[in-house]
Amino acid sequence: MDKDTIPLLPVSQDDINSILWNACDTFRGTIDASEYKNYLLVMLFVKYVSDVWTEHYEELKQQYGDDKERIQRRLERERFVLPEGCRFDDLYRQRNETNLGDRINKALEKIEESNKAKLAGVFRNIDFNSESNLGQTRDRNVRLKMLLEDFANPKLDLRPSRIGNMDVIGNAYEYLIAKFAAGAGKKAGEFYTPAEVSELIAELIAPKAGERICDPTCGSGSLLIKCANYIRRQGSKDYSLYGQENTGGTWALAKMNMFLHGVDSARIEWGDTIRSPKLLEDDKLMRFEVVVANPPFSLDKWGADDVVSDRFKRFERGIPPKGKGDFAFISHMIETTTLMNGRVAVVVPHGVLFRGGSEGKIRQQLIEENLLDAVIGLPSNLFFGTNITAVILIFKQNKIDNNVLFIDARQDYEKATNQDKLSDKDIKRTVEAYKKRQTVDKYSYLANFEEIQANDYNLNIPRYVDTFEEEEEIDIGIVQSEIDFLECELAEIKIKMSAYLEELQYDS
Image (cartoon, rainbow, N blue to C red):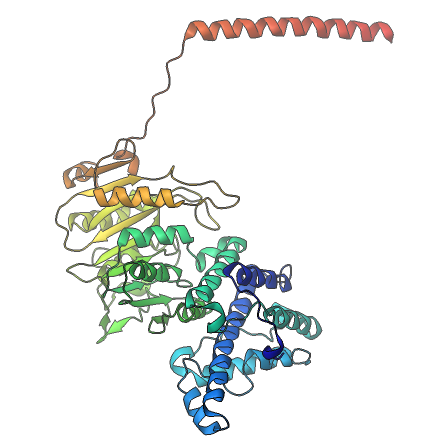
């Protein structure tokens, strides 16, 4: 396809989103959304870097004419280097080849090899020649050809001169991830936190310019991006993003997500955060001003036996039960915060607030160390694949008082088809309540240490926020008159039914 022959058409966020979502028809009904998302998102990444490279190549050609060596030296300094034959247009021209999946795989290998510092390992978990995912050769070739044709849509022109800024492509990537999550059921929680929840966490934790921000269970990286956007709205681009993700394919999505949002310096590691933390400095855990996460709820087999002698001393308050890893992630997060101004915001299931045993002991010690700052109850149907009740816990190092704010935001949501959503109004109300730290009838309560201690360190929100609504008084006289009226109506109906039955018997 020669772009010079394609008429310039209006490009909008909605156009791009619509084209990309329609491209999913290639795979719908063939493989699960949690699987085919990888093919779509990798192709989107390749299309974007190809369009950027092509535009820069054309600019250099106009500038330097036939001086190929000079052009090549300049291209080698591009953000991403594309070897010969590896651009999207090259793949599109090969769309009728019988070994199309293998050709795409080899192109991805070359792109990765030419960009080792940025893309090492990113494409190793995606196989465009997979028979188990994409079908036998003929069917696979048909699907991949359709995918390339969808991405060759003239409106999907992602050259910088057409889309204007990085946000458009980053937003499109986020749009697709959210769409895939909606169709992936329980598996969605492995790679995506609903955008509104991520926005709420970013607003609550309020990262500042110059701070280091980490998500130790980062999924596709959307929560980190929300925190970065919060700082950008304050007029700064001075921040550092760090993350770790255990699932290889999801780690690759996070890496690409960072690049498509213009965050090339983000450090995203692949591995098990509890068993093998990768974010280290001088063989010690890195520390961050902000640590945020939506870890897997009550993860079974999280590694209890592997951390008995944890060399990073993350579990000195106690080792959580083998079948529930919530406090393992909390313990890790707290031990990776800076001691002066470190903050943690973590989404956990409601049981974390009151379960006993080793969890109760860890919870008590965290409270006694004056690390817990707030407990925020969320509506029950916000997360993909589960309607479990969740809360956000906020921890702070170096607190100035020993109070804990409880917020009951369970009723603040908008009904939706599958998952309910937090509106801007809902988010604003919760954030304002957190900042003001005041007791508000039936919504929030500022508890001191002695009150929590008197409750045996049980953090169940109804113990602190009274949401009981008195029922309206009943006028017995009115109710009795309504009963009398209904009984009269019933007597009349019985007489009519009896007459109707007699008439039927007479006719027969």
